[in-house]
Length: 358
Ligand SMILES: *[C@@H]1O[C@H](CO)[C@@H](O)[C@H](O)[C@H]1NC(C)=O
Ligand SMILES: *[C@@H]1O[C@H](CO)[C@@H](O)[C@H](O)[C@H]1NC(C)=O
Ligand SMILES: *[C@@H]1O[C@H](CO)[C@@H](O)[C@H](O)[C@H]1NC(C)=O
Ligand SMILES: *[C@@H]1O[C@H](CO)[C@@H](O)[C@H](O)[C@H]1NC(C)=O
Ligand SMILES: *[C@@H]1O[C@H](CO)[C@@H](O)[C@H](O)[C@H]1NC(C)=O
Image (cartoon, rainbow, N blue to C red; front, side):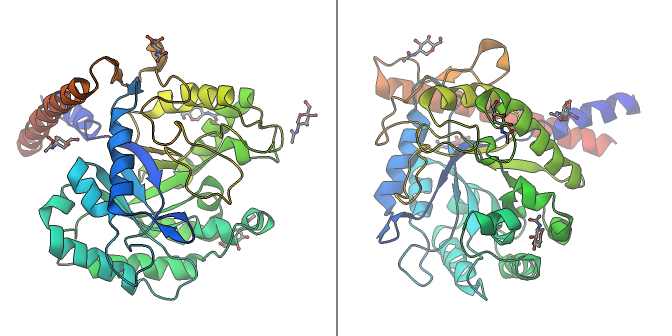
């Protein structure tokens, strides 16, 4: 009996909610901040993509501060509330000696939105690729200003103490970095500080190995495994991955719509619904990046390639397939989502009872 309970409890742990979404930056260019309506347009498109495997109803942010302000909360918060989009929050950590303004922005948002915001928060990443930018390849690639473990660790600690006593005090706090930064033992003290590891991994950029698209799955798996191997059992979330639809050659990798679709079929279809994934990306925002990753043009729900996953992939079934009735199909999704949510609640209650019996 006890064994059976234990076994069922183990499967309870894997029944937690899985998130899928896109990354979204704070700017279009260094001079134009995204406004609430821009975020809202992105979030609405993400949820209505034609033939989408499951609903993209999450977004990963890089900062809590509205671009161009000192510490005003980013307008993505209101957009997320309006569109019921969950959020992996971010705090920008490079090129600064303090994250006080980030914490102040987040606390203002907590005061303003309360549980409406809390209910959408998946976690908080303190930093994004800061360690990578300081690494050998980051410097070679002129990736920009980074920050090392001696900066990131105190920032993680100050995010924890900053949120203590607020309604966000128990959210998972982590850090996002490249697979290479995570598997670099000089950074292992950061792993001790986090609740989750956000991993960015692009086989396209692995130009030192034979990174042609035919090898992309194996490369992804190998490097993903390297990250998992150092994570000490902590969750590894896929915070950025994708393959460009256009751009320069990178080693043996070619940017093309065909290759972007192949990468989607092998990687998105393998992880969506089973691992938290924030894909790169729905909309290209930075004109200085030569590679273009957007899966549709100008936020059209009509995608550049068909997002349907192969039947045997185990990915969520396609949604938004009834193109003749756009609005109705969105309603159907909301209904489907609430059925799913009832399922989660049932599992949750069951798991609680089982935990009690044990
Ligand atoms: C490993 O990490 C350290 C500290 O962040 C960094 O200085 C070093 O360049 C990294 N090593 C490589 C090979 O990138
Ligand atoms: C790229 O492909 C060429 C031709 O097949 C091969 O000779 C070369 O070793 C590959 N590059 C790398 C870094 O493996
Ligand atoms: C990655 O790890 C999984 C699970 O341990 C294993 O089955 C797979 O062969 C590994 N893949 C690579 C490319 O190393
Ligand atoms: C996408 O692929 C699915 C499955 O093959 C197909 O039923 C659907 O018609 C395709 N959608 C478009 C817009 O081509
Ligand atoms: C928001 O989405 C969640 C799950 O994604 C769902 O359970 C909930 O019912 C939705 N809320 C509204 C108001 O649609």
